[in-house]
Length: 395
Length: 155
Image (cartoon, rainbow over all chains, first blue to last red; front, side, top):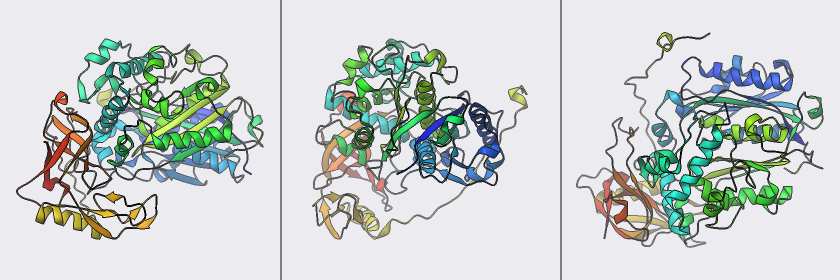
């Protein structure tokens, strides 16, 4: 059985549209310095580093090598990971696995991106198959629009239902100084924004962002030695189902609206951690919702409600600050999306919530938090964090 | 250090070229050859679950079986979902702006159990319906590419 693992240090840059004042290495260093200071550590205390981004967005590979002065990884074990939108959550999970293995006590996890350095859509297209995907694929916006159309058809949800998600995320971001967008939008603003790819409008989509985030993962043997209270990782899982960009739409063929990879990875963790009613049991959720319709379909596949029930719950404020289970107090991905950092920021925000350190966006008395990553051909990563040390490691 | 933006240097990659030579494999090549030479679709059938993959693949993921039985597939099918792309972006294959708007759909050909993403010749979302019947329209000049299909037309 593995070691129990906690997040014991958090560092995050302010998320901004462009950071021409720093190189990638310097941006990484900002987050790492903050995480180490938060954890009361120096570079010497790091046992291993996991780092990653999506190379396509900068057109420069091997971040594990060229960032080594700034990442703190000089002459230490380091592993680089790239898994698309899930990159940040994959990094967090890999750092968790490193520590849970018992081989390392203090592992630094770093996710970053400078999306300002390329055309995001072009970079996303070139991540996929040159024969079967690239000739027709139009990147994330159009790929998600296909999902939105099918979801509305399967459930009767509307564009206005989705706009409620977009408004909520942007309102929440007003409480978060780290967020890239601070937009006080109304439903009308979203509905009147131009279509990017029908039925997805400008107001429904995430921005592209420059930013970095670093977390310290510590083993149960040392977790109580840090200046801040540990946020325990209770369980993690990921599932990859589809190979080509066309495959995920098969999920809708039978008139269903479920997202099987997300459903399966969530259930896997829930079963191990003892979650039977996510809406009742989670105090907060930081979810990778890249656009508004995700805030409907993914809530259902994460088990917060049944098929087609997310729009009514969303309109009732269930997932607002002050609601039954606030979703994305940070403002989420629709307010900041430095892609390689995005999913690890979900884990960072969940840790801050558990530790009571989320300042103006703090949800009262958080004991259990959900964090997710989303990417590629509808891949899904799930992490559950808790305030109480678990009885044993549950994987 | 608080630098003025004008003092910060950036570098454009410019007209750089980094060509690749990708491999379609035997089945992928067969599919593209049939498109190019005969304006026909070919898929591959799993001997275990019977699922037909278009374009053909070598392995059925769930069964983990090697697929060997190539089967003909119709050039007509059903529209599973769609969008109308209206945001401008640079096509990384050509370096040129993609001409927008265009209809873009997931299509399941008759006789296939997977979907193809392709263009559909309609840009008014009110005129496109999930479940609509579509038929492939081919380019006059074909090169052995998925773009040998000009688009799918609503029928």
